[in-house]
Image 1 (cartoon, one colour):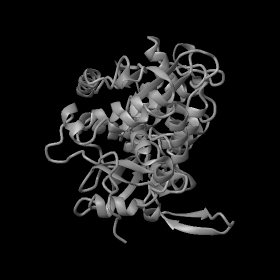
Image 2 (spheres, helix red, strand yellow; image 1 turned 180 degrees about the vertical axis):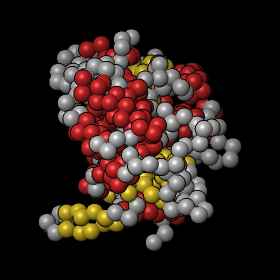
Image 3 (cartoon, helix red, strand yellow; image 1 turned 60 degrees about the horizontal axis):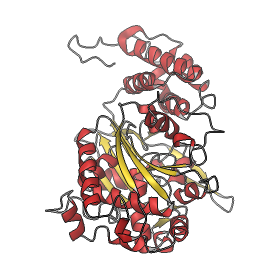
Length: 449
């Protein structure tokens, strides 16, 4: 079965000939008209629209955005803040950067609608330090929007005022975790906070109620308010509404960013029909479906899933619908929508060594299991790929990885252990055999770590 037609909502105008990131172009395409209508409606009504839409966060966890908004403490009298999480640091993920570079005003409008809906007077866009061009584009877009009275004091003559500030991070992966991001925004080391009591909806930025939403998520808010929550919920599949942007990288013929309805396209359709399949003479071997921390899938494997009536069905990997729930039922996650594709030329031990080196470097060091566990996983896989593999390394790796999940303050413990656990489970034979003699790597080979 061929891939369905793209349903472009966020990418509606992106890549159109002549479409530019300046405000005049955005206004010619109907920009800020939805904000004009939104500020004439009761804020609670807008929040209900987002809740009815079923929109789930596009940053990784897939938590319902409307539910997150409903948890905000509105009784304390403290100011409410909104933070746009543009710290797109998950390896294999690049969709938010593309939105910022191509259509920054869509993000500004979605942010302003969300601010009005939640009585926010001050918002921050926390952008990754390695995205300087994106930061400049956002600064310019905010200035343009302020000049047109879409940002700042007395917006559109309504008496409502809200400012947006761009804050550049310092390039730490842990700042993608919302409480680590908040600590960094406050000028401190980005150590994630303990929850409870520090749930951002109650005790967030400056100990005030705070909403943290992803770039793509806030862009969807603009379209939800335009079409209505009930109509938006008809897009996609139940509990997986709307569209998703998939960023495909690795060993396919047409890598890139693609927008489809949630659950309406399968993994095989995306990789073979849309992305052109493997490179000539190669076969696809594995795919990480939601950024590097998601558990890897092996081509050819099958899954037994439960139906709602209690019966079971068998699902081939290529037939997995790309939605949050089915991917979770298959033992992995949709995560940030970044698909990393590997063909049969990839040595899975070397691939894991690179992933482990990254997570070991990026651990904030606050929790012993994550700090020491990620380091030891890096040491073991580094030793293996540099010619000193031992017979017991596979079992040792598993033992270390299994001791991390559920024992750390934030989810990075799980995120650094899942690759090792899944690589060993799916490609254990490569790790078991790695200690056996093999050809020496060429002297001029690039270093792996």
